[in-house]
Amino acid sequence: MKSALITLAVLLLSIPVRLHAQQVYAMQGKIMEVNELIKKYDLDEALRQIDSLSKETHTNLSKKEALEHQLELQLLKAKVYDENFEQELALTTLLAILDQSIAQKFYKITTRTYLLLASVKQKGNDLEESENYLHLAQEYIAQHQFDDLYGAYYFSLASWHRLKGETDLILENAEKALFYGEKYKNEEDIALAHTMLGVGYGNKKDFEQAISHFKQVIPYYKKTGNVTSLAMMY
Image (cartoon, rainbow, N blue to C red; front, side, top):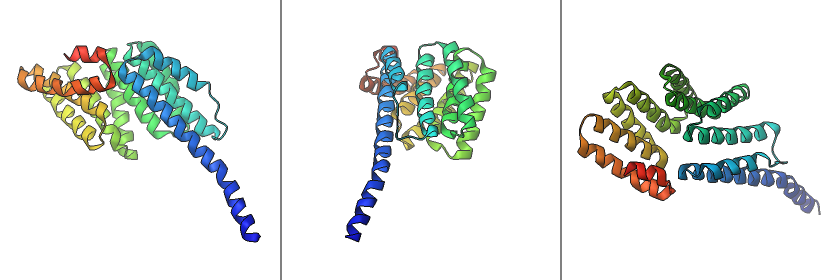
């Protein structure tokens, strides 16, 4: 009888843990679905889903976990704004995320925010601020060993050198982006690295190499269904 009661108690105690794990897993799945919409360039639907997910309540999460989830959603929203060249909205959203992620020590969200801020500043041709954010991102990546973010970092650095007209540094950093993209099997990082390598070799008038890299990006955009980027690549 005593053994049965102990077993029952253990089972009852494990229920909240299972519910918490299931809820976290479901939330991560929904975030991945929104990210796929962004890759597809279905930005209106991505925003609609982000707003819908932001209104959901999660009773099995702590306040800190719920805040982290909300910041993840806001980061996706900022990514949509950046993709849509709505730099003012992207910047406002990212700076609000940054304040909270630093305060709560959400180090990876902070790092990803710095990387996206660098992208926003590049689109606004503010290369000095972009460089500052890239430097902060690199510090966080090194300090917290977020090596899986090096692909995005080196792509953004290559893009920064593209705007500076420094072709050799475009190629050097795009090669590093490709290395980390392949190491962590990140298809987006691989595609972006090949795109930047195509740009670099195009600048060098090595059109055979440029076209070779651009061709390697086409299957990725076919897979994601991003017809806008696919057309641009062709």
